[in-house]
Image 1 (cartoon, rainbow, N blue to C red):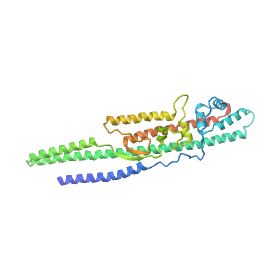
Image 2 (cartoon, rainbow, N blue to C red):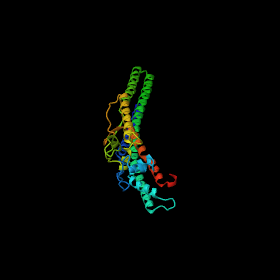
Image 3 (cartoon, rainbow, N blue to C red):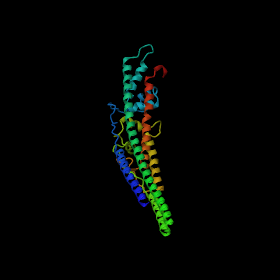
Amino acid sequence: MCAVTTGFLVVVMLTGCLSSKQASSTLARVASDQCDIDSSGTSGYVFHPVTLAPGSSEDSLLRHRYGERGLRMAQAVGLTPLLVQTTRLEGRQKPDQPTSNEYLSLRQKLTDQLQLASFDIATAAALVDCDSKRATLTATLLTRRENSREKRMTISAITIGAVSIIGASLLNLGEHHVTADWLHIAGGLGEGGLGVLALRQKPPKAEYRHPRNPLRDIWNHPKTSTVFPPLVWYYLNQPKSGNSPSLVDVLRNRWEVLVSLDAGAKRARKHAHREVAYFDDGDTYTAEELTVRAAMLGQLETEIRLMNNDLTILLNEIVRPIAKR
């Protein structure tokens, strides 16, 4: 009886060790996988954002012709000089005359540059999306490791309880009542010890590096970004309307809340509080911390992808027939 039980426990332990090694190898590979996407000059065209001077003749001319969202995107891509030229040509265009070749050439250049801008936006979004999915996958693997550990401890506790009950029953049948009582006590202590050990287990962690960190520029707010294309960085630093805060400020405020909630949850669980380097080159992360990082990356990706809405608005305003404006 004891030999069978011992053999069963050995098999469970060996299987757990083999599974743990495989899981550790997969976890290390996923956590170290970098998103090698160059979004610094994807389009091959260097976009130089151009800000309109409020109250200038160009500003007044374009605001009568384009909406606020379209103009914000035009400034991010650096198209305002071309828009000024096309708008002035439209003003000189007579209804009974064919559209001039100069106007058609300028409009083609505008649409070409908007298409290139869409490539830069898509690449920047892909960079953030890749990092977000990597964080989510690593968090999933860490959660599975923790669940597997708890499962093994549960199986061990059940096995100890079953062995102690069966062994004690057999001893009682043989009139070895004192030994049976001691076996009951030993079984209870074993189960209780495993329970206490399970409660005191710390969540598993993984070394997670992100030298090219999309979150860092939002948090530190440098003048020039080393991660995002100029048009994306300009757009993120502009207010959506009027005196509203920029997207960078909005994102940072959200992330401050997320980081503070994460720290509060750790204190409530009496875990040792430590600052996670979300905005540096990497750190040792738990599954919960990686989930927080993935949430921040998801918010950033959403704002970048929403740039396509303003890009579409600007394109529609450029190609729309003059008579319908």
